[in-house]
Structure formats: C-alpha cells, structure tokens
Amino acid sequence: MQSTESSFENLRNDFPILKRTVRDNKRLVYLDNASTTQKPNQVIDAITDYYQNHNANIHRAVYALAEESTEAYEAARDKIANFVNVKNRQELIFVRGTTEAINLVAYAWGRPHINEGDIIVTTEYEHHSNIVPWQLLTQEKRAKLEYIGMNDDGELNLDDLDKYLATGKVKLVTFSLMSNVLGTITDAEKIIAKCKAAGVLTLIDGAQAVPHMKVDLDTLGCDFFAFSGHKMLAPTGIGILWVRKSVLQTMSPFHGGGDMIREVHKYETTWNDLPYKFEAGTPNIADVIGFGAAIDYLTKIGMDNVRQHEIELTTYAMEKFAKIPGLQIYGTKDITKRGGVISFNFADVHPHDVADIIDKEGISLRSGHHCAQVLMERLNVAATSRASFYIYNTKKDVDALIDSLNIVAKVFKL
Amino acid sequence: MSSGTDIYHEMIVDYSRNPINYGEIEDHDVTFHDSNPLCGDSIDIDMKIDDHKVTDIKFHGKGCAICMACTSVLTEITKGKSLDDVKKIEKNDILSELGLEHLQAVRIKCALLSLKVLKSALYTYLGSHLENTEGIDKLKTEAENLY
Figure 1 (cartoon, rainbow over the protein chains, first blue to last red):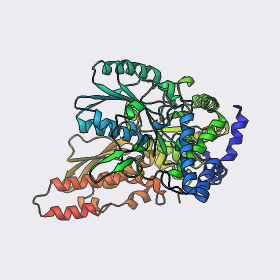
Figure 2: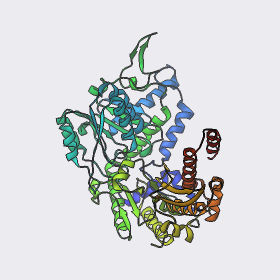
Figure 3: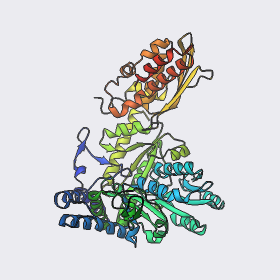
Figure 4: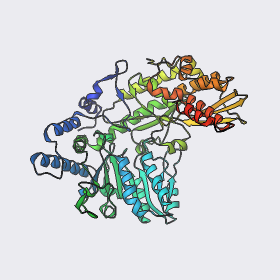
C-alpha cells in the first residue's frame, strides 16, 4: 500500500463504527487510540467465523473442529512472531494484555530471582502497570524500586540509570518503548546496551510502540517484551509476553492448571513445554485468532507506512496547536522522537471540562491522569487532555478537534 | 438531560475562575482530604467549629469547573450552619443551586466530591469529640448510610 492521505482515508471503510454518529448527530472523531483502537471488519469477521464454523477447545481432542481451532490459534502465534521478528515461537506467550504480561514476569521471574536489597529500576513516565507490580514485588522482598527521571522535554536522564547500575544491585530495568502520555520514544538501544554491559535484564512495555512503528525483537536485544492486541486493531483481552528462552527457562509457572502440565500425580507435577507451561487453562482462542487477523491487516499496510502517516498527522496537529493561544503541549517537539500521542492543557481549563465540551461535538478525547500519576506529579499537573492517532484518523479529524477547542475557548472566555 | 455546553453556564465558569471560600484555615478544628481516582480531582476542606456551629470553612485543591463550582456553593451553604443541619445537606442542595439536577452520570462524581469530603470531615470531627462511647454506634450507622 502506498502511504498517501487518500489510501488511509479509504481504510475508514473497513471500520463500521466510524460510520456511526454520536451525540447530536455528529460525525464520530475517535482520538483515544492510545487507550484502545477500533476494529476493522477483517478482525470482527475472523472472530465471527471462528465461533460460527470452528469453535472447539485446542491442544486436546482429535476431532476435526479441534484440529482447525488449534491450527488457527497456533497460526496466529506464528503471525505475531513474524510481525515482531521473534525467531523462536516457544518464547511467545499469550496473555490477557500488557498488564498481565508484566505481572506474570513480576511473579514468575521476580519471586525466584529478587532478594532483599536488590534494585529494580523503572522510569518516571511509566503506566501504572509498569510501576505497581514492581512496588508489590519489592515490598514483599524488601528490595528497592528506583526511577530514571526525565527532563522537561520528556526525555529520560540516563545518568540516573548509570548511577543505579554502578551500585551493582540492579536486577531488572523496565521501561516503556513509547510513553502513553508524552509519546516519547525511548532510546531503548542505549538503555539495553548499558544494562547488558552490567549483566542486568531489561523488560520493555511495548503497548504503545508495537501498534505504531516497526519493532524488531531479534535486534532489540531486551529480555522481556510485552504488548496488547486491543491497541492495534485486535480484540480486548489478548496480549503477548515475549521472554528470551534462556530467561524463560529459569522462571516458575504463573498459573497452575490444565494445558500447562506434562504429568500430574497426587503430589507432584511436571511442566509442559514452552510456551504452554505459561498458558494454563483454556485460552482466549477467538481473540487470538482476531489478533492474527489484525496482524494480517497491519502487515498489508506496512508498519513504516503507519508510522509515516502518524508523523504527518502529528506534525499537522502540532502546527495547528501551536497557533492556539494558551495551549501547552507536553513532551518533545521533535517529531522523530515521539509517536502520535499529544498531551496538552488549555489555559486554566481543566482537561475534564475540555473533554466534556468537545464530546458534544462528537470528539472522543481522553482527559485525566492516563494511569500515569507518577508522571503527572513530575509535570506538576493534576491531569492532561490527550489526543492519540491511528491509521483511520485524517487531517479532517485534527481540524474538527481544533474547531471544537475554539468552542472551549468561547465557553471559558479565553 | 444537560447536554451541549449548557452545563457550562456563566455561574459555573465564574465559580471555577473565582472560587468562593478558597484557601486554608490554619487553626482548623477539622480537615479532610479526598480525591476522585477517575479524573484526579482533589479537595481538602478545613472547618472551624464553635458551639456545634461551622463558624468558618475553606477548601483548596484541584478540580474541573464542575467540581470547583459545586465545592464553592457547598461551602457557602455550610457556613454558619449547626452541625445537625450540616448532616442534612444533600446532593440536590448543591445541584439545584447550579442548575445541574440532570448532570450525566459520569460527571456526578465531580459535582459531589466536595459533599463526600464535607461529610467525612463532619463525622471525623464528631467522632473525635464524643464525650463517651455511647454515641459511637449511632454515629457509625449514620456515617454508613451516607453514600
């Protein structure tokens, strides 16, 4: 597919929800993609087809439906492995989403490996899902949680990382590849290189990055990587945890139950092969298949084209925002260092009021702390408004947002 | 149903810009803080209480226009009232004052955070000023029936 405005405009036809109107017969302008994305017919149809034609449990029975179901489920794993360039499919574990993935690591890797006095390092711009599991773990183990700070442009101060690594006590450095509030793209290569030199493992929260740019896990070189399907056209409730095999082999099981075992006796059990050791119980089969369809859809567009489209839209939006008096954008202005996420505050108007007023114009914009209260504290704000783009957004959507902000200005006499 | 920009009428916008009774009371008899995890609205209320009457009340914190306007109105309603009358203040006393009776569900929490903080402050005060333990059960029942 060629990256042109008209070809992205045409994609909108694949998304039935974009045809509906909201509030007072207003065109739906959906700008909360960092939270979750809309689903194309291709994904919705794949799920429907599974339930209408193939539904059966996987990895167990020998009959035709079970075989089809298992094949479709495992084919989705291969598609995803290919999409993020994972060579060994045994390293890809299906989970509910990024939050579950990180909790799995905190439990199944963290509990056997973290001891009193150890340090886990995270950053000031993490989502709560990459903070709270580590608070729980470090509190339980009497270990310490430390933060890499950031500068006023929303970029990490890697001197902080050097300082912590120098203690020799760091066991894990965990960070998001793209901030869900600022859109900052983290310099992962630099962090991983420093950690590797110090013999420290790295975990990357890829929830915001994988949907919006090409990610190659084979060259990235981290040890854990998590992302969610629903932020990239797939259904809710399905996500991925990737763990380097040498690390995965040192991990205890997470959930015990069916499918994760090899043999169960009264008082002992042996574990199934990877990745099934970490996939206890009947998984979310239909949504895994839906995730596979979403991967097909994005592969056809090409992730470089997705990124290019969002760079164009974000540049356009930032130029327009810059002309609105009193509108403050957070994070770097350097478009090569940020994704299609723009957090802002508008004069003294509370983000909740901004979102409420423009909702009446059909615009879905997020307001609040975005599950990043540590970052809100750092920015010294209670909340921000956030617009986040995806493949089906157009300049027309940005224009509608700008027009609606003029209404906010009028109401609040700015 | 309040819709469009009509909930953002003159009074709401004015109150949010120039809140009434905004500030702190250094020698307060009771203070209470609470926040709304959904949107980050955060309110502290300080009260000066003499002879079972609220002689002074101030609030501070961060919140949306709806939250700030409602808190302003609530402090105005509360000032000078006896503690028994403060117990009787209910949500419609605030909402009707600002024409917000039909506020949509998602914004109700913004409007009523201050009432929650006020009642919590009141019962904190009452609990710490009980002369004997007999009143505790009654107080607990009253407090539990609030929300």
